[in-house]
Structure formats: C-alpha cells, structure tokens
Image 1 (spheres, helix red, strand yellow):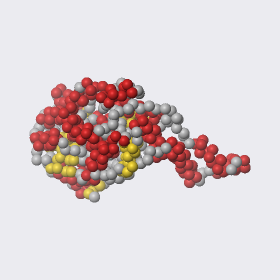
Image 2 (cartoon, helix red, strand yellow; image 1 turned 45 degrees about the vertical axis):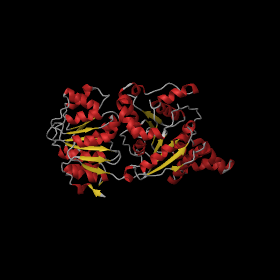
Image 3 (cartoon, one colour; image 1 turned 120 degrees about the horizontal axis):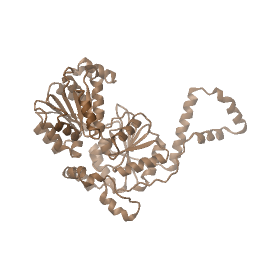
Image 4 (cartoon, helix red, strand yellow; image 1 turned 135 degrees about the horizontal axis):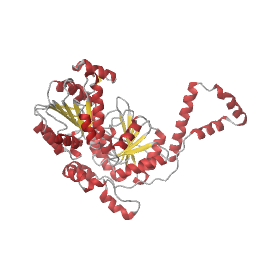
Length: 487
C-alpha cells in the first residue's frame, strides 16, 4: 500500500488526513493524485466508496491559492446529497490550508446561496442545473477556475444532464485542468473526454476492486407477495446495526418503510418526492443510529457515504445491472465486511445471471427464513444481551431475589420468563406492498440504449413527473400497473 507521505502532498493536507484517520491511500488515490498534481487531465474509472473525493480533492486544494478569494475549483455532482458530502470532505481536507468549499444545489433558496457565495469560497460543489442557473446570473464566475471535476459522470448521463455538462465545460476557461470520474464509460462520456479534455491519463480500478471484495453476496428466490415477510424475518434474525433497503419505486419505498415501522422496526424512507429538509433529516437520523433501516430509491441514495452499514437488501432487483454495483457499495467499506442480499422472483433468475457476469462473482443462494427462525433470532439477541450483563459481573444486588425465585421455580422456567419479558416480539400487523412487474432480461440487455434515448422524457416529461401509480391491490389494476412500472 502507498502512504500519503509518499505522494508529495503538502504538510497542511497531510495534517488534515491524519486528523481524519487516513494514512494509506486507496488505489484510485495512489494513482490519480500524482498525475493530477503534475497538471494532467485524468479519467478515473471507479465507483462510490473507493476514495474518489480525496483523489481529486487533494490535487484541487494543493493548486488553490488561499489568499485569493475567487472560485478556483469546481466540482459537478449528480445529486444534492453527493454535493453536500463532497463539500464536507473538501472542507475537512482544506481546513489547515484555509481553503473553503461550498455546496450549491437545487431545492435550496437561491437568495441564501447567493449570500453564501458572497463569502467567496475557493471551491464550489454543485449540481448541474443549479450551477447553470448561477452561471447565467453571473453569481458564480468561472474566470479563475483552474481545476474542474465531473464526479459520477455516468450517473449524470443517466439523469439527463449530459448537455448541461457540455455547456458548463464550454463556459470554463480552456486552460483549466479537468478530472472525470465514472463507474462506467459509455460512449457519451468518452465523447466528453475526447472533445473537452486535453490528452487525459486514464486510471482504472480492477474489476475485483470495483465490485468490493469484502461483501458477501446472497440471493433469495422468493415470489413477490412473500418479499416483505422475508425481509422482516431476515432483519429479526441478523439484527443489522445499519441496513439499507433498495426499492425501484417511490410508492414501494413509502409502503416498505411504513410496514417496517408497524412491525416495530426503526425505519424511514427517502426518495425524490420528499423535501430536501426531510431527506436530510432522515439521513442524519440514519447516520447517527437513531433509525436502523433506511429504505431508498437508487437516485435518492446516490452518493451516500455512511460508515457502519452492515447489510444492503435489494428488495427489488435493479433494472440496470450496473446499478447493483452502486447499491452494494454502500456496505463493506473501510476494510469492514458487509452483506448484500437480493430478493429475486422466479421470473428474474436470468437477470441474476447478468448481474453475476457484470460483477464477476457468484451469489450464494439462501433459503427464506421462517417465522419460527425469526422468533428464535429475536430470543437469541436477548440471550446475547443477558450474557453481556453476566460478563460485567455486577449482579450481586439481584442474588437475593434470584434465590427466592429458585425456591419456588426451576431455573429453566425462570430464564424462559426473563427471555419472554425482555424479547421485543414483533407486532403481527398485516402489510401489503404494491406489486411491480419483474425485470426482464431483454429489458436489462437494452437498458443502456433505452436510457440514453429517453433521458429527457423520463426526467423532464410527464412520466418522470408522476412518481406514482394508482393502486394495484386487485387484478383489474394489474395490467395498468405493468404499463406504469418504474414511475
């Protein structure tokens, strides 16, 4: 492994890295930082969770003159959550060099952003649409930008921002240095590299690192109607510290989160229909352990970097196989192990094979856990808490009462009663989740082309505005639901 000391980084940034607890560079950092410091453009192929922010953030901060209060660094990110996260990390990296980053994104009042920009940050991290608004208003001037970063470029393509990206780059001085990061390299991203970058050096993480080796991947073959019970039982048995559950539609996210709450789990959901304030509130609760289960759509969860996630559940298998890689990358971070469990309906087994081809790994089959196993799992969790109390050996004040109980009852009965009293039994509340059509192999194979042809329609037209479809709790509605899937 390469240490940051070996990469020619200045002492203020080394001090910040030490405060952040980082000594060794990840592969993307070890390869990108020296090239970027030398002034070359870079194309980095890497997914979220590989350390991309420091890979481009360190060279950016090194090049900035802290005495000049002009925008010298610009990062373009696909989502508000990622923009906020990147700005926070850049501020941590630049704290001892007096370099300040500001996140700018849609959903926040323009007047507030303009006031913040008047404080003259040296780095702006922005989503494409809001950045273009500021550039048109001239509240963000790019005349002094030395280094521009496109983060998660393939996701910006998928979200329909590719023309905005071209327009933004054309509005920045040609003397700039450009770094582009993307998990995949579709044709449109390659065109940007060819036409708007200067002889870029390529840094590509090996496939085995792209898929994250320290994640155990499993699948459960299960009919659609039994998915929720299976999820509830699995959560009871494995009692994850923090878990993320992915679903394909906003409606199902709400229904799954509400269903888990009704069963007694600490769960909440996030998706694009929520206000920015609500989304940030839910994410903060999850980050600080006030909820254990986060239910999310792909877009809402894009860019999340929360340590301690032990389990990722694909309640719905993603329509695009590449999204699977992004989803499971939410766990198994910083050398920790994680588990990814996918619920696959019988008609989606061919899609599973496509995902295995993409990740160059084979998922292990799991048997759906039974209600009895779930109950046993809850009791086991209580038993472990009792054993931890015994290890503390601070029970003398309870001995007298314990002996009195033993005079009238046998030890098995007493322990059983204690387990029953302490075990949090789940409420047997009926939960109904809206159905969606299974992902077909044909759709998966054509997903990239379809996405590119229909980006503007999906994200700016009528279909993208809805986000919901009307009931499907009876046969009459099923045909319409299949037509509306993905809304």
